[in-house]
Length: 307
Image (cartoon, rainbow, N blue to C red):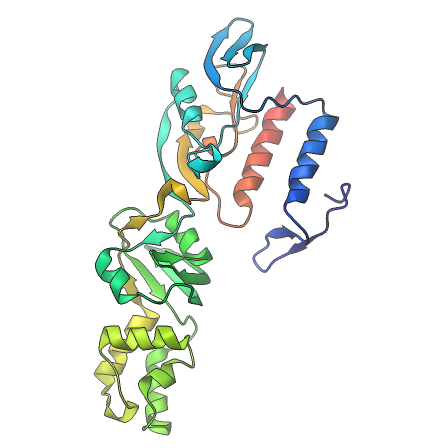
């Protein structure tokens, strides 16, 4: 990147971002491909792949290609409108490889009609939150959408979520909401509970949480039991998503070609010499923030060094 004059910066969690447009990265990669003598064949359909003693033969919509080695870097099923398909998995099965069942990962959650109705009007509201599924938890931003929940914290936890699982959301991490509400009741008993809660959360969200728990009115009129119920909704909101937005918006695909069948040093298929699988088509899923790009490039580097 320094050689191509691309300026970048590091964010809080260690991710590196361009100061300018991501188009700079695309241009850099194309420039490096040109320098390496790479031939790009766009809009080309691979109709069949076969192996012989001398290597591999590809029958395509642009004719036949032959090579001693074949690297499969087809990606996963995520965002089909960009051309994503399950072709790589089909190819793996053709050569006798097992494929771990695939599912959408780093993807927003969706809610059923009843919960969507309760949260109607909150689309666009964002808070810093801690989201947990089982023993796994992430503390990042959370975003309410018209269909459910999104934002970095939700995308991260979605990779660990299975259908039917419950997630636990702390909408005010680092704050004991019950203790704060009790203190506010002593110091400002005539204050409305929504006003007190709005010191921690956006007012629209505070209002909705009070409505959902039926805890409304002056703090002086609210018992510990009712304040605890409201605090529980803030510090430990338990919700069961109805599903995710699926591959349509998923940033990555979990599952893929089983890593047990590949060399960890070269990504070559152990039982099919000359055949390599790299990147997202393999059953490796990273966290949000460029780690999946890093895996794609690192596995590609490993395969390239072995050719």
